Image (cartoon, rainbow, N blue to C red; front, side, top):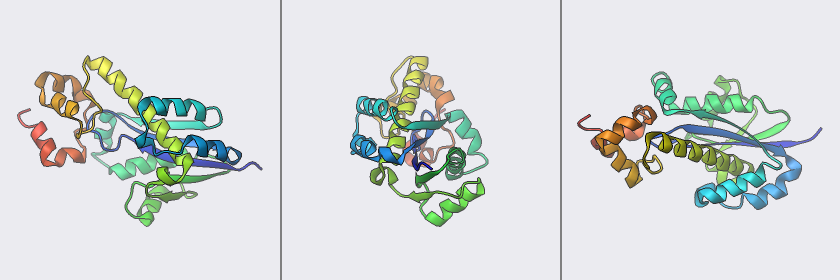
Length: 212
C-alpha cells in the first residue's frame, strides 16, 4: 500500500475584506524530496508571483483541495459559531476525504487538546497539529501556498468588481484603511467586508466605521 502525506493550512484569517480559504495538500511520500526543494521558504516570505510559480510545480505531483468561505458567509456563520470552529469544521471535511495519509495541520487553537476536541466534534480523529506547521512541514507549506494563491485571485476579482484597488484587505494596509474611510468605496465594499471580525473590535477598526 502506498504511503501519502497531507497538510492543511488557511489564508485570510486576519483580513477585514475578502474570503477565508482553507486548503489541503496531498501527495505520495515518495515525492517528499521534490516537496522539500520547492517549499524551502515560509510562504509569507514569497511574492505572489513566486507562490504562483511554485504552485504550478507542486501541482505536477500534489493534489490540492480547498474551501473558500466568503465574507458574507463568515458573517452568517460567526453569528452562531466561533472562527476556530468554522476552520475546524472545514479542515475536518477536507481531512475526511483523505485515504492512507498522515495529516498535519497548522493549528489555529492555542492548545492542542482544545483543537483535537473541535476536530473530533466534526468527525476527524486521525491527524497531528502544531503551531506554525507551515514553517516546519513542507506539505503544510504547500497547502499554505495554494491557499494564498486562491485568496489573492479572489481579491483581484473583487477589485475588478468594485472598480478600484483597496490593497490586500488587511487592516494594516493603508490602502485598505483609506478605502474603508471613503463613504463611496465603503458602500461598494460592504458585500465583501467581515462585519463580525474581531479586528473590527479594536480601536482602530471602530474608528474606521464611525459615522456609518
